[in-house]
Length: 478
Image (cartoon, rainbow, N blue to C red; front, side, top):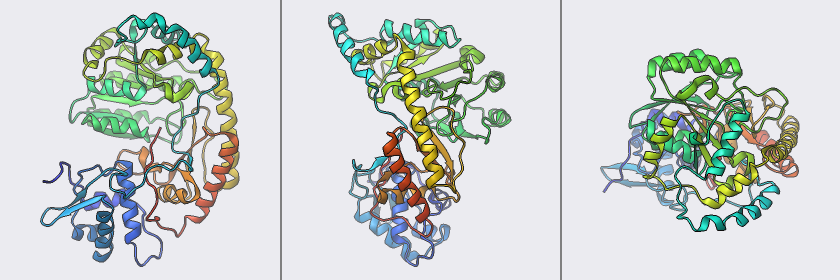
């Protein structure tokens, strides 16, 4: 019995593979096998995907039939690919399932996640939250809206930023990704288009695909958002929803100005397209420039805002939220029970404690991020001088333009130097961004200096190298 799944054409697979072959190599089967494993690890070749025939692959890449056969034989031996006479070949197992791609290595310096460790204040907040737990233990513990005290403090934070908000407009979730999944379930059906920035957050793109929606990319300009491009895409694609990260956009680090927010909101309102705004990084401004008002101040009830404590406080809390109109909140709650029945009480109490005096904790986080950003920028200029980038004014990563389209190759080779990276194409809808690389600065200054020194070695040596066939290619993204 064959697994379910679509078929990928030889031409499309060739585009996704990009520049995979070692320069001057006469036998590229190991390089091809490793490149295909990377696509599986990235999720761009899901389990069940039917592969092109060997003849079609030979024409599309182009390489010899012998190279194709040898690469597929290797992947079959490792359990990544399965084949049957008369039925072709398909992706047989996910990363790590058949031994073809091993699990994560804790000895690697992880530059794949732009997520900082907890600050010392978290431990004290946990102790306070524990003292407040007994009053909740007599209840059933289910609350699809979230604890009133936490919802009020989240609402107060929006009000302090210039967007009057009531607790009834807040729904607490298990992280921003969970919030996005809830919104997609409400707004998007199979085949519906969702307008996204290009590049964008990989897990958000995967959530669109998991909801059977179709992400439609609008390329970012060097200076930021292309309003004319959004206008054209709205008219041509007729999207059901738009997903934006206007504050320290992941991965570019750009921030949309007040004027840009007003103009873009007007374009979306004219098209009657609801806007989902991801504010996961909004609290991590690293300069003293006045912050623009939240997008909902310009777009009104057509804007659904997602927030999270994962970057500002700690990802392990798994607390996020949705801010929306009363009508949208009601509709969200009516569909939530099919996914979950609420967010853990203890973690909500921890965040509510931290938000009693939010600026105290946030000042610590910003100071830490600023120090680490400056270390990363100095190290990149020293060890990777051939790369270019803008110094981010917020967020947790530097978006680097490489001197050649070798992002995927660098991500693979870096593992031999003790680094874990996410290649640029992960941030694109249909591939691309092969000349870009995100370098998070969430490690300690000492680790960052060492990591970027190693990255410089990789960048200097990657020309003329191929994919190591035994590379660990499982790379989670945060």
